[in-house]
View 1: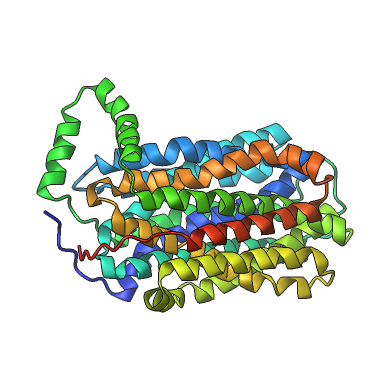
View 2: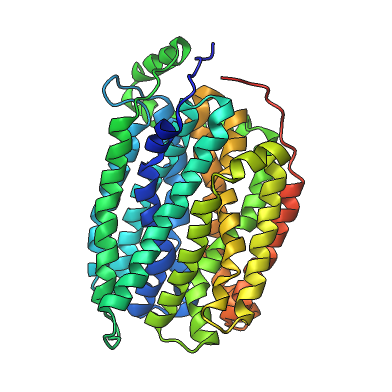
Amino acid sequence: MKIKKPNLTFWQIFNMNVGFLGIQYSFGLQQTAINPIFLYLGAPEEMLPILNIAGPVTGLIVQPIIGAVSDKTWSAKWGRRKPFFLLGAILGSLCLFAFPLSPTLWFAVGLLWILDVGNNMAMEPYRAFVGDKLPEKQLSLGYQMQSLFVGGGILLATLSIVLFQQWFGGDVEVKGAIPQWLYYSFFIGAVLSITTILWSVLKTPEIPPSEEEMKDINAHKALSFLERVKMPFIEISKAIKEMPWFMWMLSIVYLFQWYALFVYWQFITPLFRTTMGYDISTAASQSAKMSLTYNIVTAVVALVLVPLTLKFGGKKVYALSLFGTGMALFAIPYISDPILVLIPMVLFGIGWAAMMGIPYTMVSKIVPQDRRGVYMGILNMMIVIPMGIQTVTFGPIFKNLLGGSAVNAILFGGVFFILAGVFAFRLKVPKTGMDS
């Protein structure tokens, strides 16, 4: 029997999602600052994809396991999902503080692995947390609110990089050393990661499990330690076998979408070194301005997408946004003005807002309440598997098929976004008719 969930006010939904700001600030640093740091520490451009493999691998392992474990967790004091994203935030904060102090490339790569574990531990239960709390008619608002904080968190991260370089930069680049102006953005992230999560933890109580869910949780607690260790893997395997066909179709969209996003994040800084002749710091600053622009757009349009998806359907809005993102990537390499090149980021920002909200809304409506954690983990597996494929395959593609050209890399990403849009139009969204 389903629990009747009360409607929440706008500010209750806002407070529930504040913690996403800190998580996405950290993600923004990964988008904008991690690859320049690798370049500062001597990494060749063709190694950037494989150096980023930490995200896909940790996401593939951590997110579905944490999702399955959180489904079978309940504490009257701490709740179901909150203990996991609180622990993830603490781990992420420690890594963000240490990251700019990395003395060598391989030290930074190792920290990225630990940082990704923390971020993945926080991210997946947070997605399930929103689905747990909200009735179906408010799911779109809940996930688009997360999309707003995705834009806001990455916006703050990239803005800090741009401003700190302007205020404290200007030093001559030293090979093998990270400039000190980059330190401050990471230190701010270390504070935001834990404080914003604490805000949501303290402001938002979780809904207790239903009687049936509580029986499952108690039965799980009664298992031996070894059986409890095996249980998440059994749950993941079972959930994949029973996964709705819609999610299989969405996985094809995600294959092209997330492969393209990783290409963009890795090669936008090298692109400006190629097309505008910038040094690493200036190229990183320009790519940060690109990120700043599209995340401003994301923060502005995230909630506007709610009435649009209700009127036209999530599938159409999602597919058109992917086409727009592809067009943005086609335009960027051919604009040499550092101001005009920001214009395509409007389309990119609309696309990013849709990607971060609409698929989660659609999936949350069709999966069982008591298995929402594991299915959100599987949905995120669909993100990290394409990223993993990209990190392994794109280095050779970049070097041998694209001529080592960052311009061709960005155009390649544009083609993949168009393909993602084509497959998004072919999604068959099931009608749920639920009001949980």
